[in-house]
Amino acid sequence: MTAPKQTNLLTRIFLLTWLWSIFAGFYLVAYAFWVPALFSSVAVTLPVTAVTLVLGFALLYDGFGAALSLGGGSPQRALPGRRFWRIAGGLILLAYVSVYLPASGRVVAHWPLDLAITVVAGVVMVAYAIADT
Image (cartoon, rainbow, N blue to C red; front, side, top):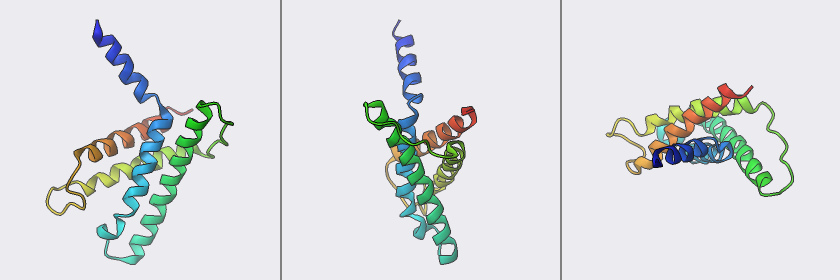
């Protein structure tokens, strides 16, 4: 009898779009600081950092705006092209999984939770973008 309640709770957690947008945005902004350790070329580092930051801040805006409007605040201005931001952010987030693999040469050798949140938030963002009609 407790299984349906647990399933219901998990479903509700995954349907909190604002929460997953905040997770995805936060991790993208954080990963931008690791880009110089991933690439040795400034010609690659600067555009990858810029794209990562823009996507991260767009998702943070989307997530925090939605969360604030839930609390009775004024409604947020909709993020133009939200579907694009979510799919691009999710795919870039999934690309950063390579930071954790292989174990030798990791930029970050700790926190399996970061890896899990990166994968789940990336998949959830892509799923939201596909489901967003």
